[in-house]
Length: 184
View 1: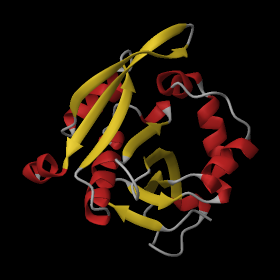
View 2: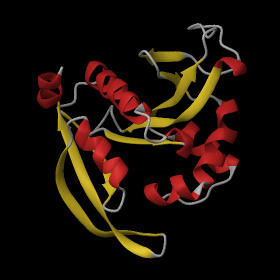
View 3: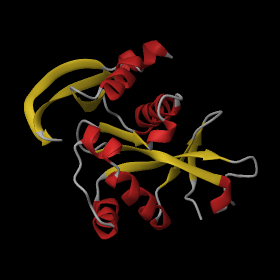
View 4: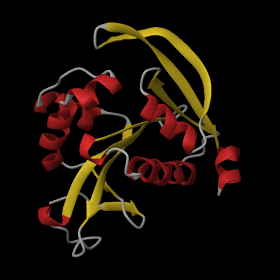
């Protein structure tokens, strides 16, 4: 059964990540269209499960809920899994936003809606002056998403990681609480 609904808007629902979501997460993380833009290694289900059980993050499963999906009693048939948005280290240092969607849902605005919901959540739940995010220089879609919701480029980590046959630069972003409030 899908996890509890945390927050939703007209199209997207963010739910808790549960054990039954692990196969979806593993399959998606092995997809080169997701893995390369994020710079993540291939991991098996046990490694994915360990990272979710032992991580210091608020993790949300991005879903489309069917017409019959209620806030509490949801079945597998009521929910379509799109991806994940997470916020790392929010309770003890500068929170870092991360997200991905499966490729068939790219370009439809679901990523932006999910990120907006999570930013609202972070600035309501945590006393942080800023939220950070990173995207590889070559990942135009992620960089465009971050900039479209108000993030500002703060710096560059040159040759940060070897991804898809090349050493890649990582672009550092930040969104101040005051900037977020000005957008509301």
